[in-house]
Length: 159
Length: 159
DNA sequence: CCGAGCCCGTTCAAATTTGAACGGCATGGA
DNA sequence: TCCATGCCGTTCAAATTTGAACGGGCTCGG
Image (cartoon, rainbow over all chains, first blue to last red; front, side, top):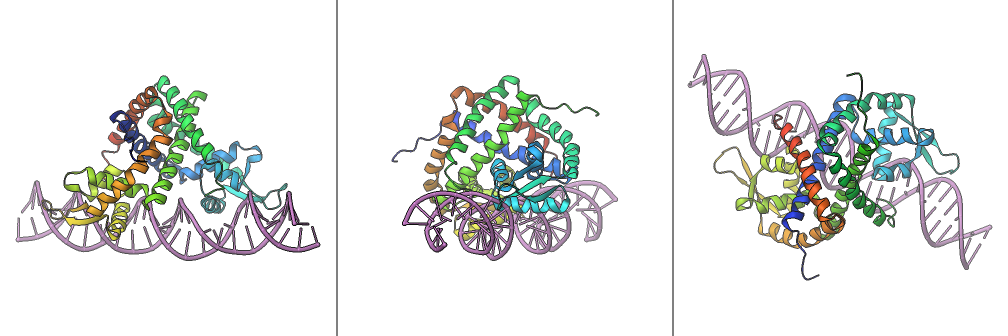
């Protein structure tokens, strides 16, 4: 505990580049989705996850975990999206206390319309700016970082 | 514009790893700072920037830009931190309408107490999980991504 | 001198996020 | 059977964030 192992210049550069980049990317995507389709990035992600799930439905808690979101935050957003007709709630058959969030046809249609612009933006600001080699390294390295963080958070119930 | 250039599997993997990792890291740091020192990550960053600035002071708008934050959001947070005594406001001498946010002694002391734990966490969750080679690639690649985003946002006044 | 336009930081209302607490339901051991 | 415990999704109040609008001061062209 006595001595802090400070970051070297090289380490500091990595760190100083990571957060701002992530913030900028997030901001950019949010803005694009909002302008084009009136969706927040979170809402878009919700649609993506539900669309990919079997039967287009997923349980609230599981969805929250996948999205790395708080349960209450998800409740709120699903509420909003239900109002917009992108999603609907349905009781879960096999677990009486569970609730399924299910994507509607309108939700799928919205997603289809939103996807091209979103993907294009992702390419433009991130993917196409990196070389395949860089992408490979980033995928491997950050993948490891992510897995550790997920693993470590296993024990905790939720937020 | 007919055809969307979708992401390949390899590209998709990069993308699917990036946002969750950033989210998890951000969450983790927020939590650690909050628990240890009652600071949000934004507040910590504000202290870092002010501490590094000449005279420990910076103009609101410039600070907001550096932090990639909205002006109104910064006004709010500086207000909070002023209440806590970490920061104070001071009129800007050379530009009558400007205001300087200045770190206080208490702010510096808080930062000093907060830094070791923060750095340790950054190491633990990101830096030490990556090899030096990975860090080099990430710094270069994401640095380019960041610079492009900043450049592109030059024209816009603010948020 | 005057007014248009700009930058500054703030204000405001609305939207969102957060975390703690709650009620419903299920499970397992006493 | 009965209660402790745990998970589920929701609710609630408080904190924060967002974006538009505002008032003040400055500068430049008329």
